[in-house]
Length: 232
Image (cartoon, rainbow, N blue to C red; front, side, top):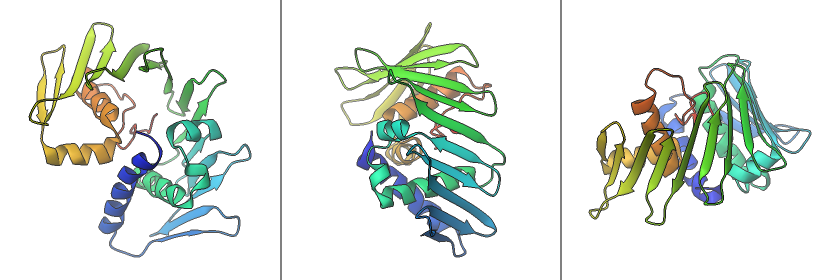
């Protein structure tokens, strides 16, 4: 899910975030035309970088750098749309307000491969194969996995001998199954909440495989940490 569709989810999350904040918060542009956020001694900003991307920083010494190429790939339209930038800032504030000294970079190389690194030693790379599946490589843990949508509209995950699927049944209910024998039927209310939190079906599938396959690992998954620290 890309662009405008993605930000409908972020808008919902942003509105929920605002509703839960009891006291006044301020979101505005400064004299440099960068977005700023201020609330209860917490300050953050989303500014344009020298190379045309966006950098998020706050007074907790967190800093995330999103290259222009990455934003065009994963957040289509954001660089030309003030509303999308504002929602993006709100989403980042929601994720990092209670985090300290976290840094990460989001970049795309000349071959279209995304590279994400942080100051905790995490390093993810992903690209797309000839069939449209995303191929991920977790450099820190030596894990490779693929995720994609097949011709039947089902979402499939595979990593070595591990596999999982997320599919809709004839009653329009989403069901998760995996090679460990886990089965989960996802209720409508939970599904709506997860779509907002994890952005799309692939994000939900990655979240569930993390829970069932690597419970004890701090895998970078969408917490709306599109990955909790805060990858991909």
